[in-house]
Amino acid sequence: MKVNVLVKWSCMVILIVCSFNSYGQSNRPIDGYNELPWGTSVSRFLQLYPGTPGWQQPDNIGFQNFHQANPGGGIKSRDFRFFQDKLYHVIVDYGDIGFQTVNAIIDTLVSRYGNIHSQWVDGSFRNILIRYNANLDIYIRVFRNNLIDMQYINRPLERQYIDARNRVEMEKIEL
Image 1 (spheres, rainbow, N blue to C red):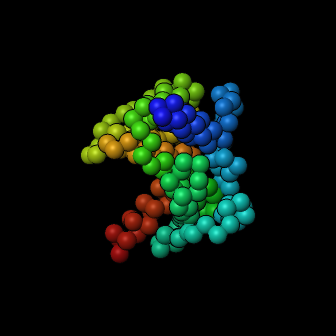
Image 2: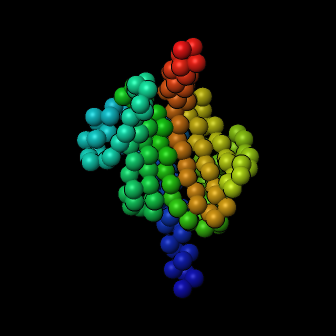
Image 3: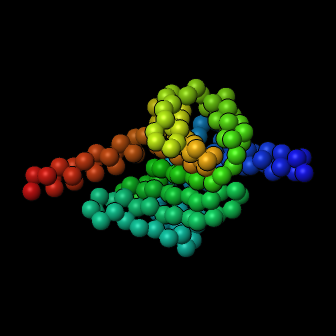
């Protein structure tokens, strides 16, 4: 029985690490998530993931979010975020995968993609930020019950979104 559990969790670690676009090649940059390069359009995304429900932010700055529940492969849910028709942020929630698996994932990511840039505890979860390069952050939240979500964030596109959102908020204040 213990062997089956070990095999199950080992497979989970492999699936999680392979979800990076690098597919195990540490010398190849992470230039997106799976078959979606950063900057992918919403229409291309919907060709690859048809029927994925989405919503737009009501302030008309061009933000869209698409959510997949239980897409398989040990993934509980995924969110794909777009700004002005460009993919810039992916959140993958793996659910309860166990303490040892969480640590194995973090160790694998650090050894493959760089040192932990910062780490902090916020309420019920531990935050780990791996600054892969100037353009990409890998942000991991580990909850006390070993739930884990990982976020892949294209920093230049995220900065454009934040700037646009801040402009809208300033306009609301000035009114």
